[in-house]
Length: 238
Image 1 (cartoon, rainbow, N blue to C red):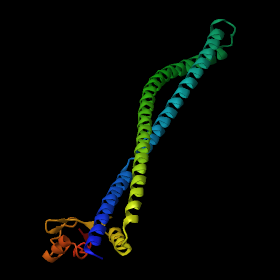
Image 2: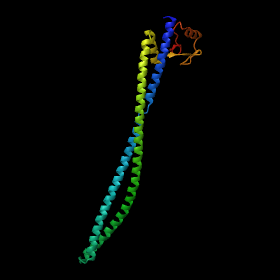
Image 3: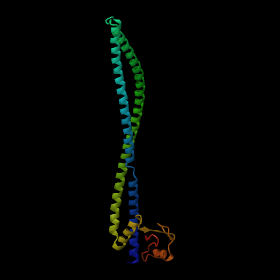
Image 4: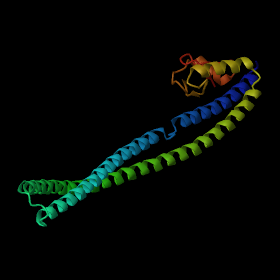
């Protein structure tokens, strides 16, 4: 290979390395994109919490309804017994005593139910506020999830298009490189060296690993007569 051919090939390899570095950056960016998976987990967790709290509210509402129905039944029984006691339809002393006992028992049950109903009314109202808060938090999380997914889809598609454009550009550069052996060597180095197969000299050091290079290596790169590689990282020098 003549000096001119080597320099031309290295120039193409450097162009290829530039493209490969851009592709690598886009792929890393794509991999790091928030696809909304964590937002989905949070939204599902908060919606489950809402469902649980809503079930508690329905249970308390059911208890309240049952207590109110029991109270209605007690009130009806109490009224019936009071009518029997005071209307003179019952004359048997023992039966009258039993009615009085029943009225006393029903009054105690009514008092207990009145107290329980008031407690349940407070509990239902408080639980309703808890449910409303849980629903609002779940809705916010669900909105955030939808927004995150929408942004991810847009960014992912944009990055995908950029990668497709770079892949096409890369294919064009690869087709221009006539030294198949050097291209294969570049690809092999790139595969094992974090995607970078070519390094520019920075002063007297490798521009990638920073290793100070022997003077004859630096001179060889500048003269462009023979291919030079970094003794430390093995990358092709240019």
